[in-house]
Length: 161
Ligand SMILES: [Zn+2]
Image (tube, rainbow, N blue to C red; front, side):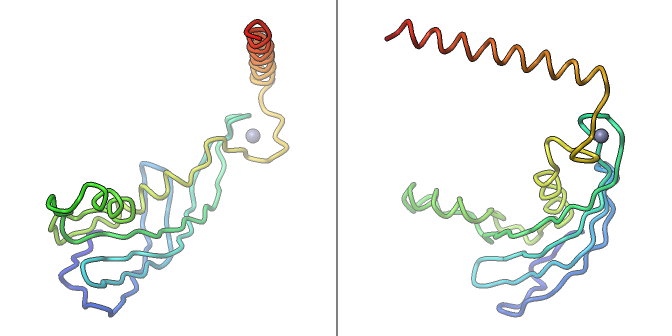
C-alpha cells in the first residue's frame, strides 16, 4: 500500500479505503483515510477499526478486540533546509515527518505503527479476569517487593533529614 503523492492534486483531498491484513500482528484494519496535499505538506487522517487478537496478561488466554485507531499524520515533501536555524528545524520536525523528496508514503507502515501504539500494554480478556493461580501469587510477591522498596526509600529520606 504505497501512496504516490505525485498523483495528488493540491487542495483536492481524496479518500482511500483501507481493508488490510496485518498477519504479523494478528490484526485486520478497515476504514477510510483522508489524504490532502497543501503546499509542501501531505496530511493523512482517519479512524480505523482494527480487529486484533490479544493475549490476556492475567490468564494468558487469547481474545479478540476491536481497537479504534486514530491516524493524524503530517508529512513534509522536502527535507528541512540546513540553512534555517536549528530551532526552526526542530519546531518543524516536531510536527511533520520528512519525505526527503521521495514521492512515496508507505500507508501500510503508517497503519502498522499506529496499531502498535494503540495496543494496550496490559490487555485483559475481562476487567474482572481472575487470572492464573500461579500468576496471582507472582503478582502478590511483586507487590510485597514494591512495598519493601517504598519503605526502604522512606527510611533513606528520614536519614537525610
Ligand atoms: Zn483473562
